Each structure stands twice: as C-alpha cells, then as structure tokens.
Image 1 (tube, helix red, strand yellow):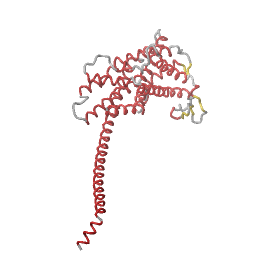
Image 2 (cartoon, helix red, strand yellow):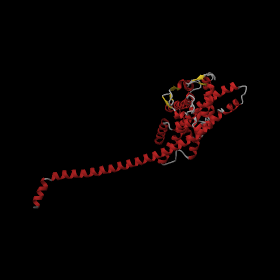
Image 3 (cartoon, one colour):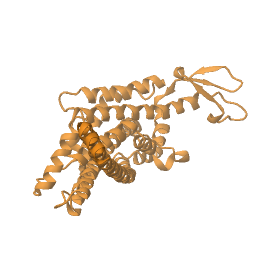
Image 4 (cartoon, one colour):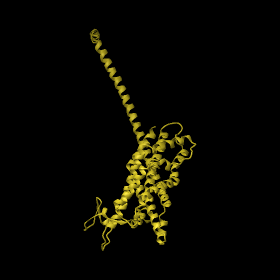
Length: 370
C-alpha cells in the first residue's frame, strides 16, 4: 500500500510542486493585496480627515473674513462720508446765502465723488482683505500640519493684518483726490437747470469709470491698488517683508485686477438701480391715494401702474438740481428710509460676490499647499 502511494507521489510529483507553488503564490499575493488595500484605506482615511480639517479651517477663515469686511467696510464708508461732507453744504444752502449757485455746484461734485469713491474704495477693501486673510489663513493651516518653527506667529499676523489701516486713513484721502478730478471733468459741464434722464445719469457714472480705467497719465486706481492699500514704510522683519511682497504681487496680478474691475462694474449697476427707483417714484402720477412705489411692478425698465397704462421710466426727466438732494439721501445713512443706503447695499452685494469668494478660496489653496 505504501508502495502504491509512493509510486503515485512519484508519478505526480511535478503536479504537486506546481500546485503548491500556485497555492503558495496565491496566498502571498492575497496577503500582499490585503496589505495594499489596508494601506490604501488608511491613506484615503487620512486624506479624508485632512480634507475635512482643511475645509473646516477654510470655513473659519471665511467667517473671519466676512466679519472683518463688515467691520472695516463700515469704518471706510464713514471715513469717506466724513471727508466728503455734504451735510455742511446742505446746511449752508438752507440759510439762503449769496453764493447759492457756487454751493450747488460744489454739492453736485461732492455727491458724485462720494458715490464713486464708495464704489472704488469698498471694492478695493474687499479684494485686499480677501487676499490678506486667505494668505495668512493658508500659512496658518500649513503651520498646523507641519512640525518645526511656525511661518506666522501672532506678532507677525498682527502686523500683517494692520496694513489695511493705511487705506482707512491716507489711502482713502489719496483715492478721493484721484477720483474727484475725473468727476469734475464729467459732472461739472452738466447744468443744474438741465432736465436729465436715468440714461444720462448712468452715462455719467460709466464715463467716470471709463476715464479712470483708460487714464495713461495718473493710471487706473485698480491697477495701482497697492499704492492706496499698503503703506510705503520700510519693513525690517524679513518674514513680514516676504509676505507683504507676495501680497503685493497678488494685488497687481491680472486675475485680481480683472475681478476687481468686475466688482466695480457690478457695484455701479447696484447704484444705478437705486437711482432708477427715484425716477420710478417721479414717474408715478398723482392720485388721491398717493400710491406707494411698492404698489407697482417694474418689468424691463418699464413701470406698470395698477389700473394705469405702461410708463417708460427711461423717458422720465427730472431737473438735475432737484435730483441731487434725493441722491444724497441715498448715500447718507441717517437719511435713508429703512436703512436701505448705498454704502450698506454695496457692502452686502460685495460680500456675496461669488467671484471674490472664489478668488479667496484659490489663494487659500495655494498658500496652504506651498
């Protein structure tokens, strides 16, 4: 019997060796595959936790960014309204002075300068803060996941974020001087006694924007944001100097300038919408009930009165001198009904601007990975 088994094994020895090798190979291969699968699962889990952590950190940065923007936008708006004070001019006009005409001329320039500086100033501030806070946020995240000395300590962070204080002071004053020259070129020739349409008001704003954008002598404020936003004092801290230079490069990049230009255009559209409401109000015919604007529907620039024929708002004309006070009320916070003033509306639409949010996210991603 043992002889038969031995003969059987001898006859099929090669088959046993091959089968054993195959089974052993499959076992080794299976063990290797299981190990690789565990490694992949661990790697993916680690990657998922890192992504979740990074997402939470970015969301925290975004919340900080929005809070900072709302706070500083209020300060910048109040600074602009204070430096371009129309209340004093209005007060003098109420006293019926001899130089009434000169005061009205000064008022029209100041009102339009106010609006344009608010648009440019708030857009530049929003862009600068999104760039700064996402640069610093990216560095802080990088510090949190790597060992060694931090790139950004609390002292450097404070100095870096205080750069915008320059804009609130001297930067705004320089921007006012720059924009006021252009406003005078466009608005000064428009006579106070002239009847103007909504389209003509819109054209004035677009002319101001176009002149500023194409000025080859003093340059476009948006292409020279760094001049208005960041002080020019020498920086002794090498780390801070590096981060500031990186920030300046970003602010001077074509992408950031393009996004800022788009934000300025959208902000002017927001202003025009508010001015259009004034023309809508003027186009409502008198009635016994003194119908409110809310009782009407606007469709494609045409006002439809309830039980009234269509009225083309674009054909409504208002004396320029009568339009100025109501436009001024849109800008002055304590004069606006329902707190629906232009500075707050601009801040709100800029904070919700998807292009600005995407810009911040891209900057955060670059600096958290570099």
